[in-house]
Each structure stands twice: as structure tokens, then as C-alpha cells.
Image 1: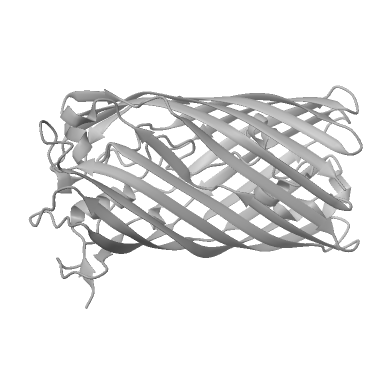
Image 2 (image 1 turned 135 degrees about the horizontal axis):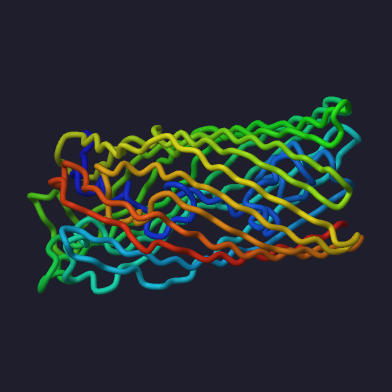
Length: 409
């Protein structure tokens, strides 16, 4: 017989986002060039990292090419629950990535990418005396996707691609039953991991009748994560159904549709604008069960996330055949419902400004980018199942530094 965790535990696994960098807890920092251009790399110049942005572009790469890089992220925000405010500690997070492409023939290319599409983390200062620590005071969520891909040049104007996605996920989250003098004694930790599968489909179209223009699009499927883990409880609670025991659960991460249009007026200038639509409404509930314990009936916890969009604009200028400079802007609409706020997504809509540069020769390339996130404040209430407590997010901001190295074999 299946045995289920309480509503409280369902909320804990759904409230992963302490310092997220895209809408909800989506990540889009696939390479330094992409970050510098605000992610507007859907339909312009191909690179090995196009396996993340638009895999169809890899048909334009010759031979065997590789890229690897890292994005370093810092984030700050303040969350107020029932009049009590707490700041996030200033932590540093690392997002690695790698890409490998190979041209099998004039019309077929293969690729393998590794990068993060979801991630977040953070810990609140002085959480022991904060009412919000009942929801969660510390979290770390890491995902890493492996994407084997095949791309086909269907004609001189059109290339298409499809790929699988194996997403590895791991998380740790800490909360307490009773803030105050017994906060540490009643603290508990939820941890879990899993591997799930998804897919993607993309194309790039470069019309001969409008040779300065190109169009690209990418669809990513939903990924249903089945997680196995454990609840580590310093003090068990029968009333709240929190026990020191093994647990498992399931959650659906949303599908998305991206599109971009690029314009190259001269050999030196490239411009692109695009949109990403993420169907966060698919992230509507989670079911949690203990592995070997009878418990309460199934809990259907509603998150009330909204479908959102992300608008981007990027520009690149080639100073000479070796050096290029770049800039970008992003408006990232948040999926958070102001009537279902939690302690772990302390930002609303985001404005992102970015700059970067790159160097390349016949074999090597190196790219660098810096981006700053300005987050909008948000006031509202927690989920009604927590009593609709007044909440507020403010002073959300983040800095990102990206470095990518490339090599042509």
C-alpha cells in the first residue's frame, strides 16, 4: 500500500527556488556568447553550444568541434513573512557546461551537450527566529541534462534537429517545525535524486530570397521527474506527518517553445530578437509518499504557477576576423502567483542587462560575459493552505560571470 507525506512536505519539494536566475527556476546560461547576447542565439552564428540554444544550427559546423565553460552566479534578496524580514546569505553557485559536435556528412551532424536547465540555491540569515523557516530556510537544487542530438540539412535553406534529454536531478532542503528556541532541535532535511527523460525538436531557416535574415525555433518537452530520497528529522511529528524515513515523489517540469529572428545588415553586425514561452502551469502539483510507512491520503498541493514568456534582444559586432563584442537585454516574466507565494522564490519579474567579448583563431576560441539581474519587488500572500500570511519580496538582484573555451579538431 502506498503511504503519503503530509501537505507540508509537498510544499517543501515544490518550493525549491531560493536564488533562481530565470523565470521560476529556469536557467538559460548555456555559453558565454549566449549570455552576453541575452540568449539571443537562436538563429544567428552556429557554435558547439548551439546544442543548447538551437541544435539545428550544428549542421553549419565543419569537422569536430568542442566547447566547455562555466557560469558563476551570486544572488541576493529579502523575504518578509508576517512582518519579519530575512536576507539571503551571499553564496556563489557554479553552472558548468560542455558541447561536442561532429559532421558525419554534408547533410548530417551529431552532437552531445551537457548543461543545466533548472537550478537554484540559497540560505536565509538568522532563520532560527523567523516564521518563514517553517516553509524552508535553505535549499540546493541541481540539474544537469545530457542531450544526444542528430541534425539534418534538409535543403540549402532549412536544417532540422531532434534530440533526447536525460536530466539528472539532486536536491537538499532544510526546514524547521518550530522557529525559536527549539528551531535547531526540530529542524529536518529533505533530500532526493533521480533521472528522467525528455526530448527536443528544432529548426533554422535561412531563406535565399532574404539572405540577411534567418529564423529559428526550438521545442522542449515536459520532463516528469521521479525522485527517491529521505527525510532526516531531528524530531518526528505525527500531527504534521514528518518522520525520519525514506520517501519518494514525482513532479512535472514544464515544456517550452522558443523562437528567434536574426538580421545581419553587414558582415560586421548581427542582431537578434526572440521569445521563450514556458508552460509553467504544468508545474501544478506534486505527490509525495513514504516508502515504507502508512500515512495520510494523497495530497494534491496546488502551486498556481502561470504560463510565462521571456523576451530577449542581442547584438554582436565583429571588430576584425578575431575579436567580437556583444551586448544583450532580457525581460523575464515571473510565473509566481501573488496569492501563492513561498519563502524560496524571492523575486518577481526580472530585467537582465549583459555585455561580453570573444576571441577566436583557426583552432581556439574564448568568450567572456557579464550579466546583472534586476528583480521587481512583489507583495502578496502565502498559499491559503498556510493561512494566507502576508508576504513580500524585495531587493532581488544577481550577478553572472561566464567563460567558454572552444576547440576545433
